[in-house]
Length: 92
Picture 1 (cartoon, rainbow, N blue to C red):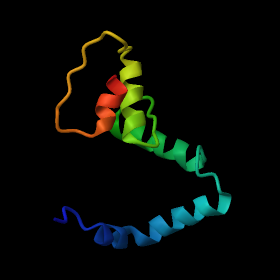
Picture 2: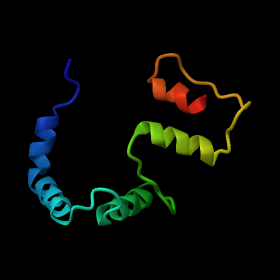
Picture 3: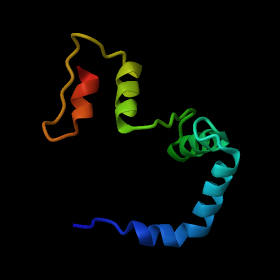
C-alpha cells in the first residue's frame, strides 16, 4: 500500500533538491556542514522556538528528549505497545 508518492514529491522540487545535494557533495561535509545549522535555524523559526536540534535518527531524538526531561533509572515512562523497538530501548 503506497501512502505517498515520493517520486512525485521529488519531481515537484527536483531542481532545488538537486542543487542543494550538489552543494553538499561538493564540500563533502555530510555531518555538521553549513546546511545543518541552516535547517536547524529554519525549523526553530518555523515552530517558534529559540533552538532546534536535528538528529541522525528517531532513536537519537527519543534519547535526547528523555535526557532533556531528566528522566532516568526508576522513573515511570508509559508508552504504547505498537511501536518500534527504539522506543523501549531508550526508556530502558
